[in-house]
Image (cartoon, rainbow, N blue to C red; front, side):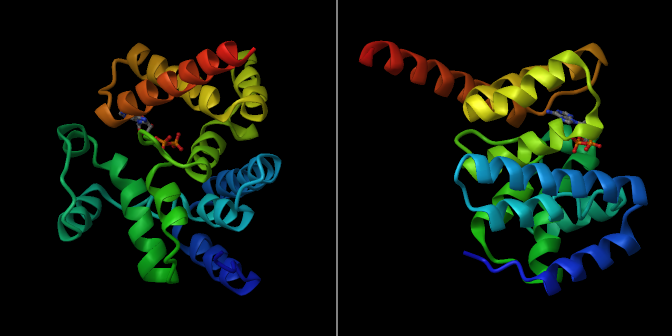
Length: 205
Ligand SMILES: Nc1ncnc2c1ncn2[C@@H]1O[C@H](COP(=O)(O)OP(=O)(O)O)[C@@H](O)[C@H]1O
């Protein structure tokens, strides 16, 4: 397990102070906190969830040209939706910054940073927790559907990821925005995972 020393945490906080506006730093700290809480509840690697929560938005304020250039340098294959909206690359590029700037080499942490916006089919539980924390941290609002999703995070992680994808996708459709296919793959994979578990539960009852 990566030892997320308080010294490294201070280094990240001081970098965030320089590169990210205060309201976004507050969001990041709430994501860190909820990631820790969910990881503790589900008996996951708390250090990994905390690190990914704290570093998920490192590239949030990088300009589109910089994101595209770094993605090209890293040899990433770009989806047309990322070319139309390079901001979506901040998750992939955030993982590169975590590695290069802070020496993070834990594959679980780097995957959770990469997966925080679009998710991924079959993403691991720490990625699920950070994905959910980013969408559902208390600063996102107190609407009843958000509060129901928050409750679901403690009952069934797969179902919570599936329903959170549905929530985000519905909002994007209503706003007439492009949808990245990876978000649809995430939704489909976690829908099937939830249904399979339900079927198994019924069979064993
Ligand atoms: N599945 C998706 N497909 C296309 N665009 C998306 C998708 N999910 C999020 N976005 C867009 O990317 C932007 C960044 O998403 P996100 O990282 O969740 O941002 P924030 O933390 O600011 O809400 C959002 O404003 C949204 O418009």
